[in-house]
Every structure is written in structure tokens, then in C-alpha cells.
Length: 41
Image (tube, rainbow, N blue to C red; front, side, top):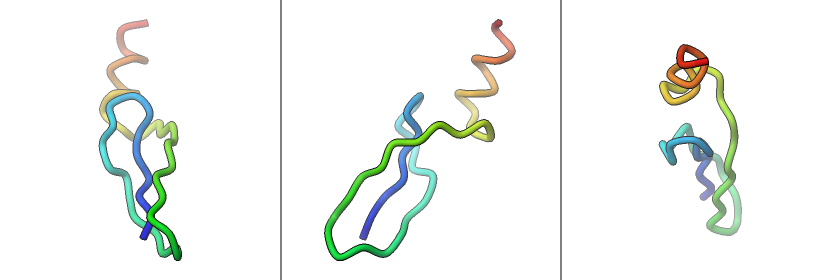
């Protein structure tokens, strides 16, 4: 099982099937931390 995690806030964005336990870090414009960063600029 793998987990997709937001780089900005470490919030879990989703899961995927994998043979090993894996964590992938991603940027996501739909995450609350990305919205807050855009509004502050």
C-alpha cells in the first residue's frame, strides 16, 4: 500500500496499491495549504 502526501502540510491526499509500503510527496493546488499560500502572495 502506498500513500500520497502533500509536501506543504503533510496531509494525506490518497492511497494506491503497491507491493511495498511507499510514501510519495506531491504538490496539490486543491490542498488548503496551497490556497493559503496563494492568497498570502
